[in-house]
Length: 287
Picture 1 (spheres, rainbow, N blue to C red):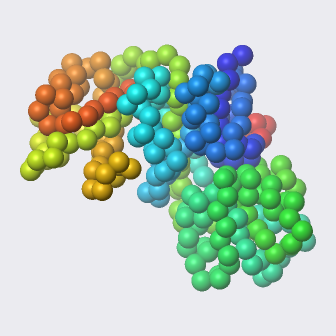
Picture 2 (cartoon, rainbow, N blue to C red; picture 1 turned 120 degrees about the vertical axis):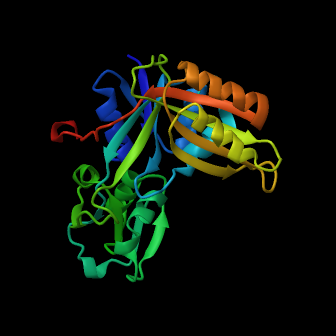
């Protein structure tokens, strides 16, 4: 059976995404961190990797994007082949005997803490980031103190014997995280494809303006434009764009060719894949 890597342990939202997308067709392999997971994928120790990329609240998962930005230029197999949308319901979890008034510290993944900023504001609790939301729940279950809580999932509460002190504490009740799948066969154009590119512009006036104009003149819609500073030189940056369309489309190929010839110093297609148009939910019997 092929191996699908995810950010573990079981109970994370990444595990939920792996369950939904894998549909029982893969051996699920949990990793302690996203860099460890992606490194295992590039080394061929797993066949697919599913990782969080961005959240509807505007958060970008830096561990994922930093790894891709650093390695995709020289690692041809590091390609996006699918995307999955998973609803995120953040819960405040604690030991069964703990009351909300007794909490003094909260543990979670940095994304979990950030996505519950309104709930946490003004409470005066110590906020301690850990590698995953499920790890936060596990640590709370093992803690001697009853004054520590975790921001995690309802599944993690069941798994680690915790109670829900407060439900749906996220800043939005419509919170969704976009996960990407790396590895597997390349997809063909189906009329509802999306393509991710990274590029850096030449150091000259109007370079970004003209680079983006290439897609406008080819009639291609950009659904995301984000800049990231590199770790090589101060002020140097790359751009991440998502384009509606498939890399095999003639207009897309023409746009990339114009980019290479006239406006950018580096460009790489990170993958073309079917656009996810529905949010995927985890069934109770998959927990």
